[in-house]
Amino acid sequence: MSAGRTDGASSSSAFQTEDGLPVPAVTAAQMLEIDRIAVEEFGLGILQMMENAGRSLAEHVVDMLGRTAGKVVVLAGSGGNGGGGLCCARHLHNRGIDVQIALSKEIETLTGPARDQLHTLRVAELEPVVPSQAGDAIRRSQVVVDALIGYSLRGAPRGRVADLIHLCNQHAAQVLSLDVPSGLDATTGKAPGQVVRPDRTLTLALPKTGLRALRGEIYLADIGIPPEVYQRLGLTFEFPSENRYWIRLWSR
Image 1 (cartoon, rainbow, N blue to C red):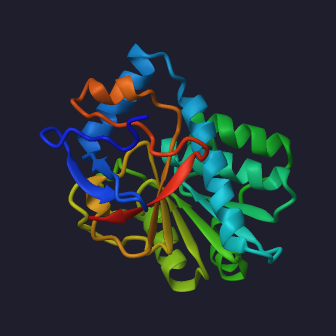
Image 2: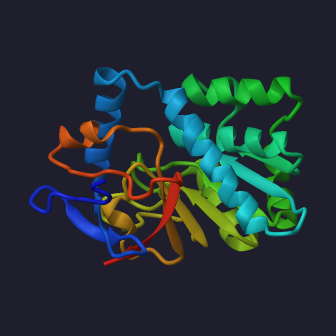
C-alpha cells in the first residue's frame, strides 16, 4: 500500500499524518477540478460523496460531545457544504441526538443536494429554526457544526451567513467546521471578512492549502474518491489508512 504518497513536483506536501507520511494540499481551483473529474468522468454521485462526508462529520460531533447528551446546531449553507451539514444532522437525528438546523437562506430558495437533504429532514419532522432563534440555539448547544460555505468562498460573507458566523464566534461552546472554516479563503488562508474560528476542522478528500496556518485540530475524511482521480492532476495519493475513513493531520 502506497499510503500518503505525493508527487512533490505537482503538489505542496503541507501536511503529514501521525506517522509522518506526507499529504498533499490543493487549492480551491484544484479541488473544484477534482470534484468535476470525480463526477463527470468517474461517475461518482454528489449525494454519494456527501453521504460519506456527512457520516464522518457526525462521528466527529459524537466524539466532541463525549459522554454528554448535549445539543447540536448545524449551520447550513445553500451549496454542497450545507448539504453535507444537513446530511450530518440526519445521522445525528437517527441516533437520538438533539440537533437543530439554522439555514443561511430561506427554505424555498434551496436547490440541488441541499434541498434534497433538507427534504428528508423535514419529512422526518426536523424543521429549521427561524432566523431569530438561531442565536438562542447556538447558546444552548454543546457543539456547533459550521457547514455554511466550504471551499467556494467568493469575497467577504454577507447577510445571514455573516450573522451566523458572528453568532457562532460569540456564543458557541465548541465548533466543528466542514472542509474549510466559513469565511476562510481555501487557497490563501486569508479572511476577507468574518470567519469561523473552529476547534476542529474536518476537511474532505485532500486538505486545502489555506488550512496550513489554521488553529485547532485538522482531520482528513475519505469521501470515496479513487486515487486515479488525483492522478489526473498529477497527484499521487492514496488514503493513508486501511481501516478508518478519517485521520488527523499536522502541518509540516
